[in-house]
Image 1 (cartoon, rainbow, N blue to C red):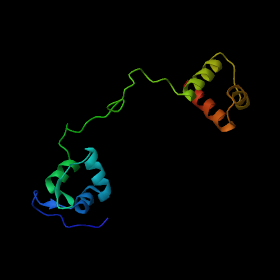
Image 2 (cartoon, rainbow, N blue to C red; image 1 turned 180 degrees about the vertical axis):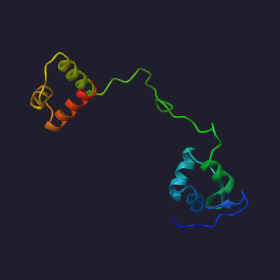
Image 3 (cartoon, helix red, strand yellow; image 1 turned 90 degrees about the vertical axis):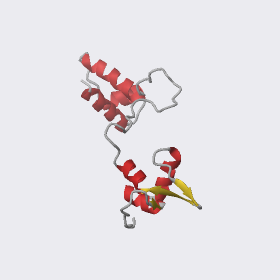
Image 4 (tube, rainbow, N blue to C red; image 1 turned 45 degrees about the vertical axis):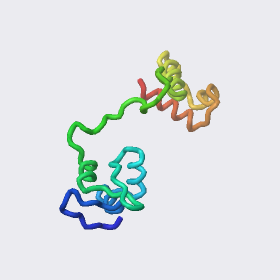
Length: 132
């Protein structure tokens, strides 16, 4: 990325290249983020967009407590029931339960029981033994 001179006035309009350089991203990424609402929208000037230095600085250094905490499912998710554990997690739990009874399983036994490759069987055993 090229280094652009940073103006002193916070209301100076910056090109996509200048603004992206300040954020450490590519101009196309800045435009994509702006269209998705993940960066300041800027303003239309001629055929392009311009951002003020203040907008870019505020985006780069948001005030404390204003950054959204993203947890759980994405906005707009329509499924409300809890998700099931993955197949690997269920199989590892089964293996752990068998081994808890004193039955030590081998890679070959796991391969035959679950019809998986040797590497997958090794991973399942490792996951089950780490869960203890």
